[in-house]
Length: 255
Ligand code: MG
Ligand code: MG
Figure (cartoon, rainbow, N blue to C red):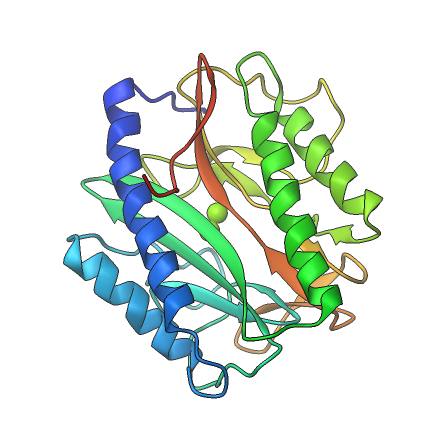
């Protein structure tokens, strides 16, 4: 069931979204090639959340048949697609690091992810980040009342495949707001004019995951970290947006 949000609920989500944005900025600013560990980025995010009295819905998240997720953020390096667990790994010059942050503040949720370069990265990696970020905004441009969920996915997939990359199909975006995952699912592929009709008050996380190689993914032995099956680079950009009468309002950006 899709839960429509009132204007005041969307304002509360926006407050959570500002915290997400600030946490992602703090993670980006903490990156020093050859020095920073993925756990250092986790710490930078925790500080921001704590300063706002916010909590992470990722910590302890335990879907069926999974061990509880052991961290506040997901940090995924290079061929890791999503759901990487922060730890002792030191970020090296040329890596790309995907940081995914969810926040619960005063009962409302927001979710955003960004892939950052670590120092100087290859031209191919730069292109992957650019195309994935563009794909997110192509999807957001379709997130307007009267359109359908398939319009979002189609715009994303089309942009990605035009550049010769693959969109991950096994993981999808989602409704978000009163909890981290609500209906409907928001696939990053689809046919125009199909799927749930978008209405004012819907709040959704749009999150293309793009691989340089094939779209297939697999989980590592920790049961959380998802990697590309062919171990090619992967990028992930995500915003939470609200459908309004005047198009999409991005919940997880700065002022
Ligand atoms: Mg996320
Ligand atoms: Mg999400």
